[in-house]
Image (cartoon, rainbow, N blue to C red; front, top):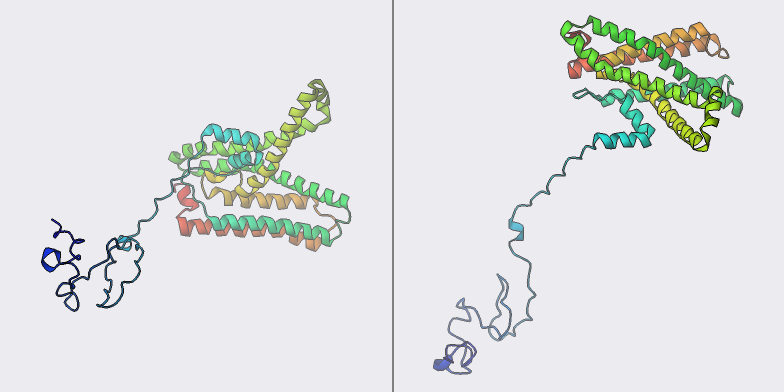
Length: 333
């Protein structure tokens, strides 16, 4: 049995060739594999074997898996969609965050509503540039020369925003009512049902302003004294919440026009155009900006409705060209 082993009898010869015999025929130049020292690892594929008379090189460390690159790369699994928070979590978040509550109350959220980011971006820039032009007008004609003037200017701007909301509250049912009455009978019920969210936004902004006013009114001082310190803390917390909700809600109400896009996408530009001309007429009647020269005041007062009217026309045109929405097909005519 010793002759069968490769380690007895000189590794090749066994009992026939004997120990110390030369390499088998065909090793040098005949394509056969040369012998390896005992315990040496097998060489990798494609290894060039040394010729006779050369010493064996040091063992080569094991290489990587030769077939790793032959398999196609597998893309990572897609990320799961975000989990929609429950209704209870949304309500709880709105209780602690008045700005989130204002977003939920005054931003349109009808399923399938057309959202045009270009229009929203232009409306935001219009609002920012309008405020900047108003501040520049006040500063240019020395309406602001002290800290008290800055405070008065901020109060005037807040009063104007609140006046715009009040005018919008009065104009809203008229325009929405005319739009619903002009629609075909099959669409009237749909528009009236959708208008409930817009009416809810009107009620929310009025309630928040009323709550903050009642909490700070001198007439409610007796109530604040009667409830004690815990009651006063609760009233002030409610007042701060209502102020944050109302201030942010006023801005959202003017941008989204009391979320009337929930009724139909063509209603906000129409209602915004009517509102801005009403505000311009109100400024002319009340003699707003008396410290500004007549020519500059006329340009400033008429610039806002002309700009908003052009924006409303462009929005209606974009809705027609890109989304196929027109006033005629909204009315079902």
